[in-house]
Amino acid sequence: MADWEDLHHFVTLAREGTLSAAARTLGVDHATVARRVAALEQSTGLKLVDRRSRATTLTDEGKRIAAVATPMEEAAFAVARTAQAAKPGVDGEVTISAPPNFASSVIAPQLTRLRSQHPGIHIKLIGEKRRVSLSRREADVALRLMRPVEAKLFVRKVGSFGFSLYGTAGYLEKTPPHALAFIGYDASLSESPQEVWLRTIVGEREVVLRTNDLEIQAQAARSGLGVAALPHYLGDGDPRLQRYAVTGKPVSRDVWLAVHRDLRQHPAVRAVMEFLVSCLKPQ
Image 1 (cartoon, rainbow, N blue to C red):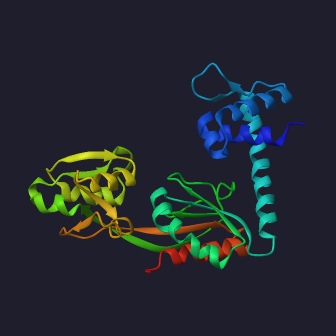
Image 2 (cartoon, rainbow, N blue to C red):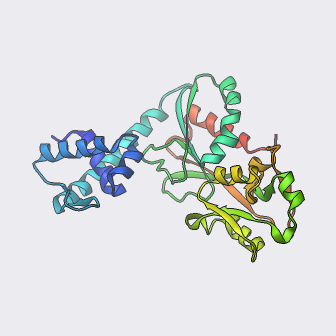
Image 3 (cartoon, one colour):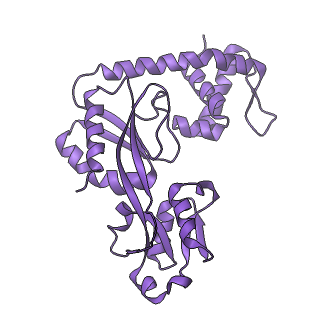
């Protein structure tokens, strides 16, 4: 019989499409994924992956094995969720997935409060932009800026936060409005609400930096490079930055909490959900 872990690694590779993406999802290095797939090929006596191609291409046999093994993976995760949900007590590890800057600026500074209330809970906090699968136990609870649509999830809106333009006091004092330089997202995030809003303000003025990372934008603004559209939770608490007032309708983002329905009533998961909701309340 094929080893389950070999099958798990192979199904993840089939789903993610590349060794590196599968490795990120599984939390291992790409060599481990390759070794597991090779072991599955040896145990089944089938060639599952075409290694002549730069991309990861499944053979016909590989596609058939992946189709059969995928429901097995789903069943295994369902067993794991059921087992976790049945455990009593407000303790154990709970994994939270949240956007990177939100995780570091909003959640992490308040974890001492959760620790004092529930010392038996151990948190794994993952800052990531991708949409994790709660069904596959990539996280137990997720916070997202767009409403999750994965099946079998409990989803609720738990708050929102606004954006303003920020720059250093020195830069804003010496730079007239027509000469302001701007810091924004690159093409990968050009349709995000805050970037669309920023474009309505920039007009013909110069965008001196584009990046896919919010912290890079904030750091560039702190250096006096220009002004950036930053969330209030990041800009208002920074003594190096001050708001620059603009006319027009402000922009905000909703925050959505998601948890698999199988885990919603687990005591530790519920405690973490309540903590996350409290993180978004005005202090």
